Image 1 (cartoon, rainbow over the protein chains, first blue to last red):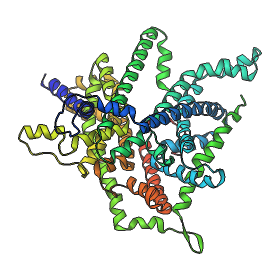
Image 2: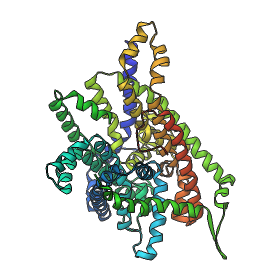
Image 3: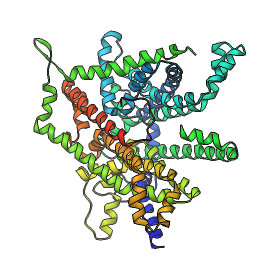
Image 4: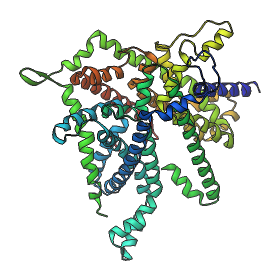
Amino acid sequence: MVTRILKKVYLYLVFLFLYAPIFVLVIYSFNDSKSRGHWGGFTLKWYAALFQDREIAQAVYHTVLIAIISSVVATIIGTAAAIGIQNMKKINKVIILNLSYLPVLNPDIVTGVSLMILFIFMKAFTGVGLGFTTMLLAHITFNIPYVILSVMPKLKQLDKNLYEAALDLGAKPGYALRKVIIPEIMPGIITGFLLAFTLSIDDFVISFFTTGSGVSNLSIYIYSMARRGINPKINALSTIMFVLVLILLIIVNLRLSKDKENSKDLKVNSSLKRRES
Amino acid sequence: MKKTWYAYPYVVWLLIFIVVPLLLIVYYAFTVTTNEGIRFTLENITRLRDPIYLKVFLRSVWLALISTLACLLIGYPVALILASREYRKKRFLALLFVIPMWINFLVRTYAWMTLLEKNSAINVILNFLKLPPLNILYTDQAVVLGMVYNFLPFMVLPIYSVLVKLDKSIIEAAEDLGANYFITLRKIIIPLSLPGVMSGITMVFMPAITTFVISRLLGGGHYTLIGNLIEQQFIFTGDWNFGSALSFVLMILILLSMLVMRKYDKDYEGGGAIW
């Protein structure tokens, strides 16, 4: 009994540690006084200031645009790459997969500075300086491996005979790919896309090194503001971001649990296999 | 199925944006530009022996180690408690643990700036209780706190996922044979959860040793950690050679420790034999 209470208290303390900073942040976003020491009454003025800030609007625009473009491009290149790699000879497969793991394993800061060197180097030939384009290229680069990592297991599970059966029944290779292989590996593609999208939205380090003056995403904006000290506008921005994440997670989880209940009685076998992958 | 050409666009991409940049890092790390031209050298690497840089390097390793240890000590019991809950509650509690991970990293770090400054909420409460105020912003403690806060879920989740899959009948067998809870924990649960612990340690140590955001926002100063040193070389000083040498050393360090950790992680089923 005592240990049960102790366990509970411990768990709540850790949750307090995790959530208290966030709630304090949220509360201060409504504080009329700029000093954190005392409560100057409820206000929405920091939110109003936030929506009038053109720099923030720009940062949001860049963040979302880069996330969409980079995740779509990475999903297309990555899925095609996964299909190609799957059919390669063992030795090529190992080499390419290991090279693909490099940006996943490498510290972000190393990936960031290495791309920065490349982009500055390439400027002599292409004339494209650090900015939106280079940041987008960097995001596509670090997103592709995650798409490949999500699609590969699905390809491994795929029954080879399915594709051959389609060909035997008269489907052209392209048609068989569209109608047989792509639908089968779709869950992996979607996972890869979502992963790429969230990684891109959240990225700071690689963006920080690959962007130029004037082009920033939300993380870079928060960093440059926070470096100068505390600013209630960041609190307001953080609160909005927190609420959005919360809503998104709740929706995803409701959908997941619904899916689970629907398919609970279906083949136990297949779900076991999926978990193993 | 002869569709290997599907991978060609990616192979080109891989060469340009992953292989070439890393080669550039190696190139800059081992060369120096003088009046006579570019020549091969090791002095960028040996500059790390300079006491100033050596101190930064050791300090990064030290702070990352402390944070990893703290995450393990705080996180292991959490994983244990979460895993022992009944199914419905377990899912909800695990979700509660995941939510902070989804909040932007910068926001999470910034939150502690608000909490640790002089007239923060914590100090108002401490003052009210007639306790001495907490003044740790811009110190090593604040940096470690920031690391633990940001990376704790990376420790808990891998351990949790191993513990959840643990065969309950083994634990029951140990209890039937007369082992009390602590013996079961020491002899059964902890050894079986080691793969989770290992990947937890890797997942906390790696970002902790490379971070430059936490040290900049919560640690203040300029030369605090190796990440800041690299940032300094590339953004302000423009000394690409030394910056590349630092990145190169950091990269080798990380890849080597990955290699060591992988030996323990039997569950790993990724790409290949090299890493």
